[in-house]
Length: 332
Ligand SMILES: Nc1nc2c(ncn2[C@@H]2O[C@H](COP(=O)(O)OP(=O)(O)OP(=O)(O)O)[C@@H](O)[C@H]2O)c(=O)[nH]1
Ligand SMILES: [Mg+2]
Image 1 (tube, rainbow, N blue to C red):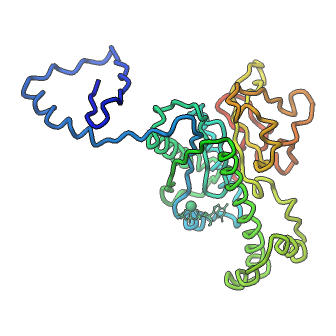
Image 2 (image 1 turned 120 degrees about the vertical axis):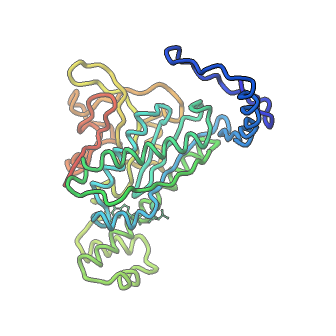
Image 3 (image 1 turned 90 degrees about the horizontal axis):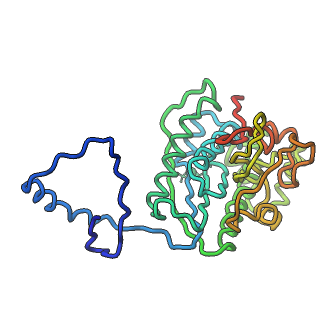
């Protein structure tokens, strides 16, 4: 056991020894002296545990993603391939870390919520953050071709990450509400902005000027009168972002119940979602989720999917085995 002089009470768990590996040669006293001479540097490694009993949120965000989207020909304002790739990468992270009870994604960002009682990596903030971030980034690259087909990655994308702790359920819900409100504000603006630029030939500056000072109702009206577009009919994934949660689903074939990460495009701000999924805040066992196709019963309100949504990967559209997420791969 390593003695930490700065934090003598900090006990490190012993690493399991692999008995099949050759043992290190026994060091001589001279080597021991050299080793102890340097060992003090370990004391500079400060512990960074997350506070107990707090929800831990790791949020990753694409760095310079505007440029990345431009260079890779992302559709404006929403590229379904890009969003589904983000969802796939996030589900890879959730598959790996079962203590993540919910993830919420929009644009180039994803928030991962760890159970407040998690003991993963002894709740070390840097370890949680870096592992989530690197798995997300590598999964994004790993699955790129499945979503973007022949469009080659021009350079490795980067994501930054942060850890935030929320001591109460209300704080956590407010955090998620804040991220979802952000989707609404940005997407409504972007839909109007790119509509003016791409369909009406406005320059960026002209579109900006046209939208300056407008309220949400003005933008809704503009979309309807100029483009015949009812904003409420835009795909829910664009308007609300994606919520990933874990459920138990019957596997077609053997009928066994397995963990499945499911996407929902639903409101997180009101109470309905939390009432329908009480296991998340209640730290309860997973709920069984019946896909609409299983027993011909309609899906719960939160997961009702229009055919358009199903194309974009809605609950019940394709999940079948553990380690799967229902977000479908598309290479359109
Ligand atoms: N065309 C297109 N662009 C997208 C899409 N999703 C994200 N983006 C781009 O990604 C940006 C994300 O916003 P930010 O995170 O604030 O911008 P950023 O360039 O990543 O800047 P930093 O995060 O500060 O490094 C958006 O402004 C868009 O330019 C998409 O589906 N289509
Ligand atoms: Mg970004």
